[in-house]
Length: 102
Image (tube, rainbow, N blue to C red):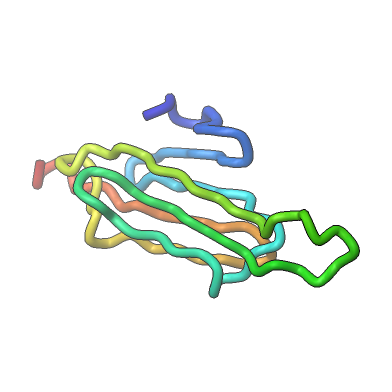
């Protein structure tokens, strides 16, 4: 995992506080119906695929995004992930396990 506040990858921003990991992912051209977020083993998986646009450029592929971040299950509540897609920006919150429960 990248250091808190550092960009995880291009178009991704990650911030961490005592409560949770907060991710912000720019996904222009996609709506919430195009994006899926889920936990798989010790990873947070984000995938998005837009629809083919009717335009002059027939060769242009639809927008696609894919990413996976490894997260320690003893630190993060993988069963409590919250995601919100709005105006081409995906916001994901992964709550942390309380210190006394670790």
